[in-house]
Amino acid sequence: MDNYTVNFSVDGQPVSEEEILDMELSRYHHVFKIFNDKNIDIKKDNTVIPYEDLLRLPLSEAKEALAQTREDIGKEKTLELFKPEIVRGDDMWTEIANNSREGVNMQEAYVDVEVHGITLVQFMMFNQKLAKENNLYMPSMIHPEHYYFDADKSGKQVIIETFGMYKDPSYLDLKPGKIEPDFSVKPKENADIVMAGNTFLKNTGLDTKMLGMHQLTGTEDGMKIKLGVLLPEGAPKDIADGHKWHLMVEFNNGLHIAAQQHPSFIQRRALETAIHHMAKKN
Image 1 (cartoon, rainbow, N blue to C red):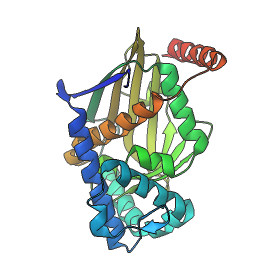
Image 2: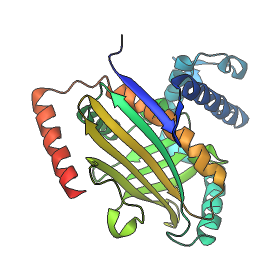
Image 3: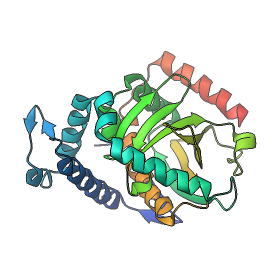
Image 4: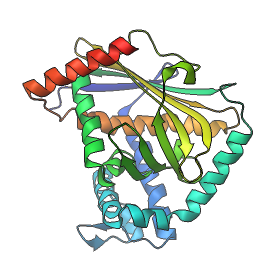
């Protein structure tokens, strides 16, 4: 039996894990349709699964099939296969940025998470594992609309994802940002870890004027997390609403993976020291 709990809430209202898993499965079906329309086979253990059978898979098998398929396709081929979607995503974000004033009337979308039985150290180990493996398999297991992932040691990430589960996948360059002066919204003073970043189009370098800021604060037996994205004023409201669900699916899976991380004494001390240094900077 799991000895941890993860509770999500949005705008003060609790969201059950059952609701999150139902949303996750619906997005797998959405991605399966996209792959089917592009004549891309979904394989599990080197066996092609017909589209109609994909829609009958339980969530665990759907996740494994898509993750294996993405890893088999690889990063270079993924960029080629989804070039039309990337172009449409570039056009969408260019229009949004051109119709938005920087830092004005930002649309704030937040998800609150209360965690018992999983520590900040375990979460950091999960985050390091994600960057170290740097493949397409693990991000796909975390959210079905993670098409592409590439990370480096500086914390930069290049991704293709359907941001806010809205329209086409977007090819985005995520760069860690300074909280001041880049961010008009400041983190809580007691936050131990602040993961903040600016978002650019990978192809053109255009600043989308979208910001991300996740805040993690350790508690006696776990942590409290505030997940946040700040969208520019010209973005459709559906993106903000959809990204709340995206964050819940993503972090629900990420925290379950974090719970399986078991730090050694040396790892725990090193990461606790790193967390202490990060907290002092906030």
